[in-house]
Image (tube, rainbow, N blue to C red):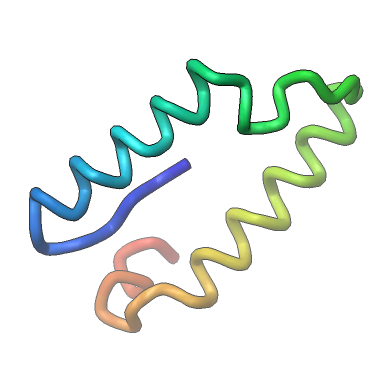
Amino acid sequence: MEFYDFKLSVVKKCFNDARYEDEHVLSGKEEKVTVTEWFEKWIKQTVKEVDNADPELRSGLR
């Protein structure tokens, strides 16, 4: 999971929310998936995030 924002407070909040989900098993860790299934899900999400990123940020990612 990645967080992009110019405000540190927003990034810290997102990070703390993700940590809470992780500690309380809300992030889907109980799913039984293969490495291939996990990778396919991860790559689709990553491509989606890059495509939806701010054009200025996206230019540095590709």
